Length: 327
Image (cartoon, rainbow, N blue to C red):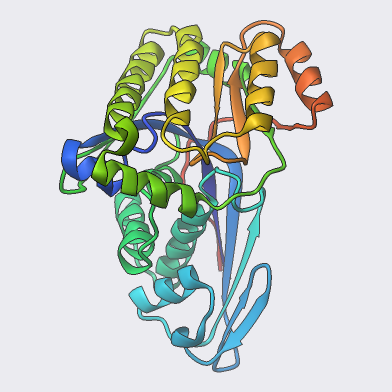
């Protein structure tokens, strides 16, 4: 039996510049953090000559081609595993909430399958294989952020060149800077699940045609990503909160599906209760809000909870995808 644990992530700045429609023209840059909310994958050799997969439903099939779950199907085909296997997944957080769970699932599954085959692979290889499955094979309209954060963990800067090659820089920040970032950054679940694919498909289309000034907004978002990195390195975490506000105001202009009147009311409430800034995680439209608040956090918590949001406490994950058990 093999068990892997793979972190979810919170995008901090530059999100969307990892989409092919942008980085193939201009190169991408983003900064993101893995968090201690996880996808767990268990695989075990099965006595019967079949494949059993348990997630929100159960499949029992004779070959990978019959599998309905696209990520499992393509992972088994990529690694040329075709029978006698049981795969189970458990998640700390629901899917479609903007924390990168699909890519974390893919990375964790690949890590488990390579371990099953007694193959050692690097975090970079895991991330690229996950990108191959999601972007190249399944044609998902997503970028490369989620796969790399799931594989590497930590606070990571990703520099993506026009050919799609990714350079990973792990930020090693002083303990007091990290403490300030973790204690002042608050995550709240809106209760709204949404499909990132629909928003990202529209964003890719806008980038390709430069509709409604999409590319100019993306240039601004990339620059904000660089500024957030600089604010971390200088220990000015309050500036990060202010940059989050700019990031959100710019991001909202990319699509009318990113925010709505209810989301705007929650954001305005958070600002009125002391948040310097914030934004929805992932593509937008729902899922989790992150706010940065350096004073009056308990008042902010109380107001947002009364407004229907649910807080999720978190810390940074520094390990990335990890094999917890191998017997």
